[in-house]
Amino acid sequence: MIRRDRVVPPLLALAAFLAGWQLLVFVGGYATFILPGPLVVGERFVVAWTDGTMAPHAITTLAEIGFGFIGGAPAGMLTGYVMARSRLVNRVLSPYLVAAQAVPILALAPLIALWFGSGLFAHSVIVALIVFFPVVISTLVAVRGVDRRLLEMARSYRVTRGQRLRMVELPAALPGILGGLRIGVTLAVVGAIVAEWTGGETGLGVLINLARYSFKTPLMFAALLTIALIGVALYSVVLLVERRYAIPAA
Amino acid sequence: MTAEPGRALRDPGPPAGDGSVPAIHLDGVRFGFQIDGRQTEVIAGLDLEIAPRSIVALVGPNGCGKSTLLRVIAGLLPARSGTVEVEGRPVTGPDPRVGLVFQEPRLLPWRSAFANVAFPLEVAGRDRGARERRVTDLLGLVGLRDWSRARPAELSGGMRQRVAIARALALEPAVLLLDEPFSALDSLTRERFNVELLRLWERIGATIVLVTHSIAEAVFLADRVLVLSPRPAQLVADVAVDLPRPRRPGDLDAAAVTRTAAEIRAHLEGATDDAFAVATGDVPAHAQPDEVIS
Figure 1 (tube, each protein chain N blue to C red):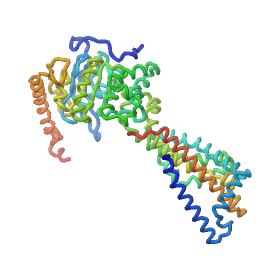
Figure 2 (cartoon, rainbow over the protein chains, first blue to last red):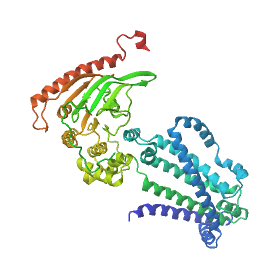
Figure 3 (cartoon, rainbow over the protein chains, first blue to last red):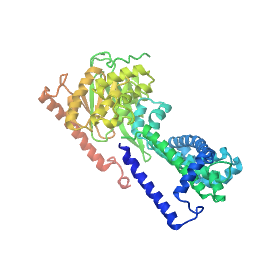
Figure 4 (cartoon, helix red, strand yellow):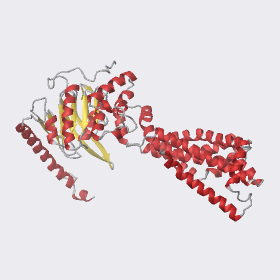
């Protein structure tokens, strides 16, 4: 199978990494609460998922990412599109967009906690904000980059605004927009975790904090592993969508 | 309005030049645009009548505004003054009576050949069945029936341009405008395409206006060759091509071809000399010297 070429090298790298890690713990003789070995972490990971420790936290974090993404990504696409097509809107918004991007959204997290509390909604707002900007920028650039000759061709057949958007601009800009979504989805994971650090009952960020305070370092690692897996899974979903729908201009 | 989507061919109208309503009528058409705040004239007062079902070739020096003229006829650019009429009715914007084939195929890369040809029909809101019949007819007309599922990237340059022609014919335009449609093709393919274009024209019965840089091509294809001056474009000469149809590359009267080509060349060279004078000066002869410096 062709897929073997793709799967084997990363797996070998993983094996080498785990072996090195285990060796480091073995040679260094670190205490488990300082640096647990991969075997301990793996065991803890399995236990946490089987005894019901991990699942509620993971579900909360996923929900925050999901709601935030659903809120932030379409809003970003819409804003990016309008900015690309309206000189006025672009002039009005772009300085603020740059300013807003210069302020780390995560620094706003305490403020958002103050306004919206520390529940699912507040955390989703942070995720939405963090997803919003890369999607705006990528959509703006992608829509501006749509081949003007194709637009002229479409105009010669008297396309309406809606037809132009649906039949020309959106498919032409899709690869660029999905590139922004790819960045957005990984940032969304970061956003959700940091949002949870500002307060909350459940979530993988909360779990990390709980584990840290009680020196359950293996559990911390297990939570980190879960976060990484979520990130990879979501990234892969966007990548799959990209492969399926985005046909790059010839 | 009931369209007859199944038929690729227009019903045979009156033959060319019988004094009926001209397919295209330009009356004092001017066009210009702003460059650095300065109004530049591209087309300077053009009057033109083109008979239905005829083929007219536009030749002229580079950048003289031939493509601009096609866009004005197609309604993509508004004439600054004067009127453009197609079949006796004014063109006020992009018009389904006019099909425009650009220099490049301009296909949507994510759509199959079939879906590219269907594009104008979708835009016009034709239902699926009508679209499918029409597109199948058109792909057959340009000899690409077996390639309907291919994406543009999988087609050769010539095939792409054929798809573009089929697309331009989708709404059964009375006028087909071609902007150097085969300029990207190698000369052998190009020759074959010209023969195919004539065959296509005999079947669809549309009026064709094409821009070309090749005098030989203009003579082979056209009933009339219009020679345009450098910018701002004006009609320099209107050369009738007196060769019988149907034309096939082998059986053209060589002497007549040579004579016509020489006539066009003479007009064109006259025009191009002017172009050189304008290009080097870029300023009217009566302009002040310090204007030249600034």
